Length: 275
Ligand SMILES: [Zn+2]
Image 1: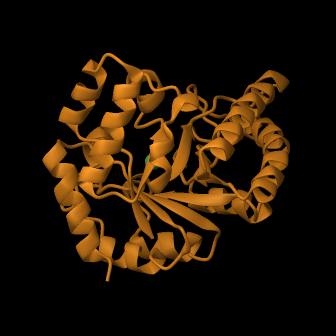
Image 2 (image 1 turned 30 degrees about the horizontal axis):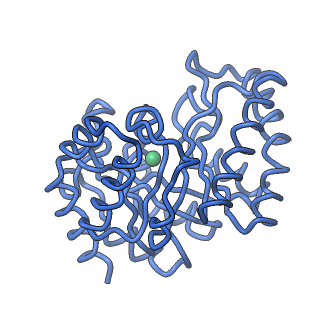
Image 3 (image 1 turned 60 degrees about the vertical axis):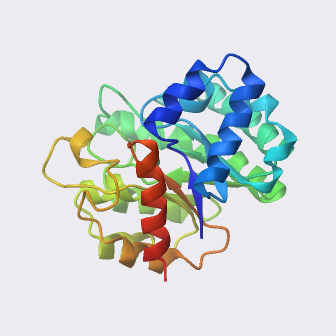
């Protein structure tokens, strides 16, 4: 496995937003990834907002060639509903442009969230949504195979808001779609009461492409319990990382809300954990 920058550190976030020219923002991003010692970058949405594109104002069509020595993955985040043909068309368009950018800049994985319903899925809505999602994603699984750019779905699955309620529901869909990759969000799955062993038992033999890494604490508000620095929660990273470390080209993207020093020390801690 290799480690990828996703969170860039609080001070760096402020800094990049203050840089006037886009080309200078790209250079800044490259320099900090190198300075931290990351082997790759996961570009895209982060913790509720579309960080790189909307907040850092980076146009993915303008990625400079010098990024070629970093491994790239693209995270598209959430998609609403899938309750009608329009939702499917919007998703198709998003995936079409994502695969174009990925092919142009050598991204090796594109990841998505399962469909989300802000009002909560009823059993009926869930059934319709899964039918639409199922048929819409299939051509893109074929495109992933054809282009050698994997397409992964993050293991977000709690309660009524995500299409899959629980990791076993997620697993049921994944088993029907063996070409779809798995992106395990350690923080959220652990927070949702899946132990390290359960995560390994349910997802360990799937087509795992990446990990979203941050610590978690249970039985507190979700904002206080997820995206924590390594050691601020109770996840046994040694068990999880060492289980997955030999998966070819697996990325471990740090989704940790912390300052610049925190990113450095967390990356160091994670490297020490992987044996
Ligand atoms: Zn995540």
